[in-house]
Image 1 (cartoon, rainbow, N blue to C red):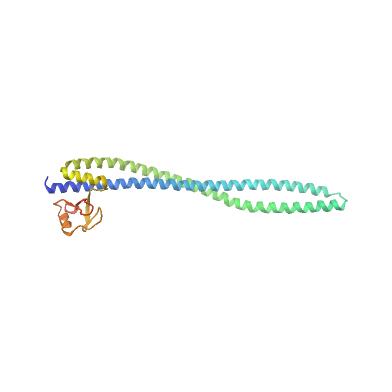
Image 2 (cartoon, one colour):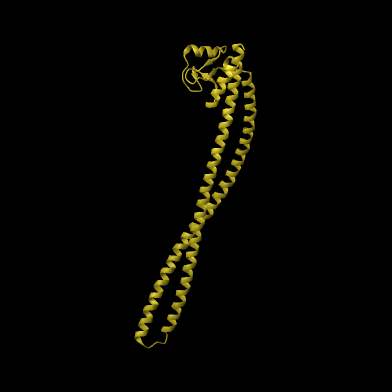
Length: 237
């Protein structure tokens, strides 16, 4: 095979490898982003569940306080009724002190209930907001994940066609170059790369000046002395 034809084949291989690498990286990116969205949704759901538990706990506490207020109020009424008609000063004093104590307890319970009701309003609002955020993010997350799944499926199908084209081109290479490219592809993301301003775009090392000139001319096969990739240059085509 003449050098020019070989270089042309390598240029096509480089282009296919770039397409394959781009598709593979996009599939990986989609998978990573999907995983991140799942983790974030899990955090939203944890926050929503926590807010709901706190709101439910506050509701239970308020109901308990309201029951206790009713019991104390009923007991206070009983004591106030008992004091009516009493003539024994000691009994009157004892009941009066008990009534005062019950009133103080009732005041404390009512104050505590009012404070907790204010907190409950905030907790209820937070619970509703957290649940809404979770549902909103969940819907958006599912839509994004479904779109990325379709994109990845299309890209995966595209990689099959690219792989087939690569195998066809590799089969057209002379045995020595075929073995070299195959060996490089086993260990590196690309066996054939472009160069820019004398820099190998595989390992990003500078090529010797003479080699860079030869690559620019595009008539002879050149390999990077650092990473041993084949170097081509598109601009001559």
